[in-house]
Image (cartoon, rainbow over all chains, first blue to last red):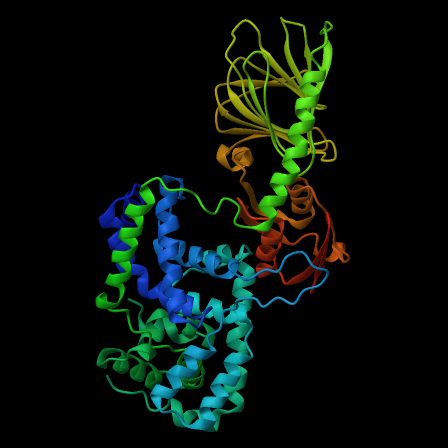
Length: 196
Length: 342
């Protein structure tokens, strides 16, 4: 049912309906903002990019592809926009390029500070996540925080669903191994579960 | 609602994947607390697995507070303002936002000049059945309007040959890819010959791809009706939104497709859907008019890509591909070398 509604909403957005724009903006702003922050640390730059993205989408109007999952569409579009913006040097023999990369580390770090976690455990967690590849971190984020399906994540990367599944499986395994080795320290942090 | 029993054979991965499980850790409440405590009590053998899963979820848990209305409303207001401004005609300042577009323009100028030269030099008396050729070099596209009003979009690296003077015949020979918008004429069919087959039409639009170096060939029909006459003199009728595909053994098949995917190149869009690198490379070389070499080609030729190229420069396209499969590249003039990290 949800997809049918999204379809209609997206269609009216494509036709330039202001109310549709408002609803889509409201429903997706947070997700886009936090996703963007994983690529670019500067909050204002992320906000500017979201605004620019919407402007471009509106400009494209009915040339935009149809979708029944707006969140997915927008995340993918923003990702494309941010990663494409990499400053590229003009023709040269060899060049060192700094890619804009996805990273969960800063957000997790920030999270741990606010939780007043013990220094040792903090390092272990950061270390464990740092061992994951950029892609693995992003897959975790898209899957668990934006509920994208494996198929959709695969489309974001233009790869096979099985590849994404494998990456996830290896990521979880790597985390598991890390935590197993540091069980004693971590338990102090992880237990007990905070009550609401 | 999942019942408790379903969780009995879960591994740690399954728990992490389970939304109910994650919600318990992300935002525990009395109900979920009770549910999971009971589960562990009844399944003591799962305690370790649950613990591992919980540690993983905890470690990646982020509390991302929704952005408040007050925070995003200003940006929405600005956005709306910009939309109104955008709708007013304004000078386009960013006509050439990047360097590659300028190159394209520079390349185009000699091309146009050459075309004009050929055009004028052809003003001498036309002989009956004189052969005329349009050759579109790699990296360029061209639009030709034939004497009968038929529009032909020629893709990069294609050659269109036709005979002028013979007023009764509408016949062209194609090597490469072209999109035809054929002027209606019930009396005189329009014929497109390729090495493998001939397409016969009376008025319609369709796409033909028949490159010399490719052993397969295809026709996409957008509207109207065409018939394909194969080398064995078989006649196959196509309906709109159908694709005729003939393979290296001259076996053909007809399938239903979305024609836009196959014909969008004429609007300067290159669509690649789950295509192997070995085929993609050929298309990119033609699209950009470059030559691409890959040292460890055998290892990577089966990598599959899905991408859409609109106005991206060759460099931007390489950057896109690198996002999916890490590699480094060097560009020297028209020669590109790609070194995969694999």
